Amino acid sequence: MKVQEVIDNGTFAPCEVELRVSDKDTRVFSCQSSLRLLPGRRITALATSDNKKYVIKIFPQQRRSLNEYENEIAGYELLHTASFDIPPRIYHGPAQDKLNIIVYQYISRARTLLEVFAKKPDSRQQQTVLNHFSQLLSRLHRSGLIHEDPHLANFLVKGDTITVLDAGAVRRVGNEALFEKNYGLFVAQFPVSWRIEQKVFEHYVREKKDDERYHSRLQEQVELNQQWREKHYLKKIYRECTAFHVKSMLFGKLIIDRDYIDSGLMKLLDNPHRVFDGNDVVMLKEGNSSTVGLVKLNQVEYVIKRYNVKNAAHRIKNMLRESRASRSWRNAHDLLLRGLPTAKPIAMLDCVKGKFNGISIFVMENVPGTNSADYFRQQDVSHESKQTVANRMLALVTELHQERILHGDLKSTNFIIKDDEPVIVDLDSMRIVGGHSSMKSGVRKEMQRFNENWINDPEPQAIFNELTQMNTSGNN
Image (cartoon, rainbow, N blue to C red):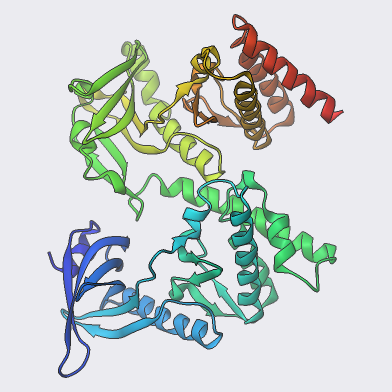
């Protein structure tokens, strides 16, 4: 397939691009995988040429793409002049088929900040990287530069070096308010529940460290950007974009994570009534309102939850409200955005017409672990380990409530224990509460439901009672 077709289609396929480096030297780059693909605009790909790896950016000769190409060139020069660590640029200019291309040297054995901070920064190494990242931000701003797309995949970490990627998002500004806003945007890339603002602030500023008004302005920008990022992202998960593919079907709409387009899920979901008919299916729940199964496709396990229609009245009710699959889809993304552990959402299907009208399906990754009810009944697990897990479960519930989130059903089977860490699932009843009295009442009911889990299990009941008393004493 030609590169232009890949960009136009918005779906990656192996392709080649040829460019003339000099009058005597022609190079062919074979694109092996997509790092980022913006339909109709550009592709960033991992490519090989003469058995060497490169990262290449390819831009069609269209107005918007040409502007992005020129911004990339200009931003790279700004970073180079200010002596920031950037990938060595091998070539930039025209290529075959009226394309513009930028070829960067591939940086081996490096990790993105997204990979470094896959979990909350508790390790010494993570703290060191966070300090370096804060200092990089400070240095950018002292150089008069901002990076307008500072998501964590745009920075590579290797040793003590942080390499800046996506130079097209870098520009020079001279307005202090823009630096403060950009600071907020950088910090907002980290989940809200991690509360890293103070750590970043300490390494970002020196001379204004004791300026309370300055600190207050920066914190305000952090909060504004966190709110904007959440609102923007939770709209993005319902439309065609780099991360998600949206497919219109005869009976509704399918949204799927682009990493799973070729997984076999799309074909499986073609018939909602037969989604559990395969051989590699373990039924977890078969009820009137929902059916849940563990489905294995191409050696990958998924948990699929189908929300059923019980009768005609139930069908009409479903037509008048957001589907439970849609709520689960949004709530899962919301929790992950906030840094709270839940199963990764893979796909959702809403059936809004035809014979499947009213049915919806939510697909999530399978979290290999044990639900908390079974975990605490295991005889071969030490009492100390159970105390640790119980404490982490309470901490997770506390984090939810601090974010003004009510889960809606804190039964023990909705906590999966994986490597002694709790993961919370079953999110279709989850909601964010605004009013103080409603939140207070909701928390009281949730904790009552949570404590009911252990009424017939003396060991976990005693553990949770002790932890609750300790936390209550500590708060006093």
